[in-house]
Image (cartoon, rainbow, N blue to C red):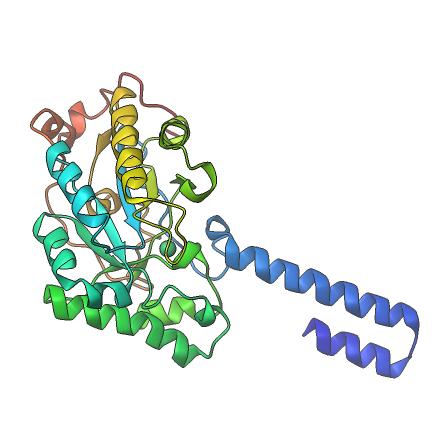
Length: 296
Ligand SMILES: [Zn+2]
């Protein structure tokens, strides 16, 4: 609209000032769209679940970009040892290549989510139908393996665009972002990443770590494992407990998970990690949090 308006003004009264205004307006508009697309926290095109309830010292651990035989088995073993149910946002193409890993993650009690079919970025500027295919194909792959389609999706890098809300609604997918991420490709050092995540974590945080960076060899399998282990250690030392993403969001702001945009979540008993943590499912005892912080 801005471009059309600028063109009309320019045609009506050709003047360099109009051309300058047109370029400036167009530039601002493009920058606004780009910032909105690349910043999940702005909810520019659609809402994203970024954090659960803040009344308890709990966090949800999520991993993106798998499955991969070099990383997924290591992480599954770690999570089994630590008795943590996490969420894996898998790429459809990789899931077709390693269906056994997807099935194993689900059998271990982890939540499986849709992280697009190819983890490319063509869908960010494609037709709406092509956008639909990108997420529908991954949904179909995961449904074939698991017997039911996923309920949650996370777009690559959390990018959004027009019509994404409609597409996810058609697929009955709840859009999930994060409020703390490791930025492993940037920081590299597992100790530094774990310290950063622990420093930023708050009650209800959704934590994003990566199995690998899809197509980018900047996150080695052992690095991913060490990062996850150190992050778990640090968060526990801070008094946080781990809860599976869907259980965390069951208690979230209803507007985020409204039936208008997202499918309703099953009600049920909160699932927490250990016997000690079962006290967390009792609302009356839920505020025991020696060092967990920033509840608001
Ligand atoms: Zn990704």
